[in-house]
Image (cartoon, rainbow, N blue to C red; front, side, top):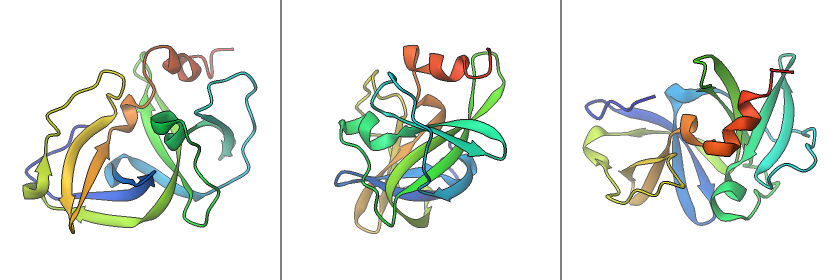
Length: 160
């Protein structure tokens, strides 16, 4: 989803290490507690596993492992953020993002949005920066979390 920088943005805030990030509420399907996941042997470390969401298997990505190599801790504020992402064929698929420090939603005012002026092709999911109550929040684009070869996990999920 593209962000309209002329309007306020509501977002769920979470932590990765010492940094804070925001997932636009418009991209969110549901926030789930930390659940026991079906493990997927021989997948990348950032694949936390599968969860059963209303009878459908949903891939869960540990956003902390993906970004820093350190897994999310199983603490009270760790949640699974369900979002919809688009496959190459245009169909939608639910993806879970495991994140810690999920503390609620914030309203981000348009005048606080900034570009980071740094682009890294290995982290296309990192979007605009928001200045909120003295801290910098980086907005996450969930549709860009899985890239290149990692998208194969999603693309093949229902093909067999």
